[in-house]
Image: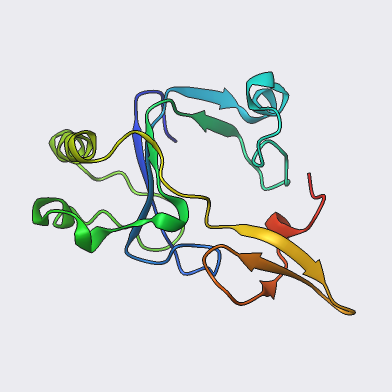
Amino acid sequence: MANEGDWILGTGGQSSHSAGNGKIIYLMRVDEKLDFHDFLKDSRFTNRADQCDREEGNTFALVSKQYYYFGRNALSIQDLPEQLRGLSLEKKGPNYRSDLSQQQIELLISWFDLNIKLGIHGDPCSPVDSYSDEQNTFCLSTCTPQPVQASQICKPNQC
């Protein structure tokens, strides 16, 4: 649903592969919206972990050159200034919401621009290693010290 020029705020969820509720994982401006199959073939993204088709029904890939990515170093929404906390930044459940006014979006972007350097501020909060015992494959996550049952995203050689 996003278009070029839109801003997207990604927040954490309940999964063991997430930084958790109440956290900002990233803020990005959509600079390019590619057909997902074109993204898979685009040499600019070769060797990226997300440049594979896991048959999840992706239609588009969103590309950003202006982003703040925190991953496992996610920002707590509670650490933001009160005027930003009052915007109800976190969505609940799957899908998306788009109910912030242009003025609220500009306030959020302005605060980020003044207080945080563009770019990457942490590694992804996703499985980083996998191993097998006699019966199961497990993943170690950067956000949870306990092994968790393997999912599509952490099975070795999936792409």
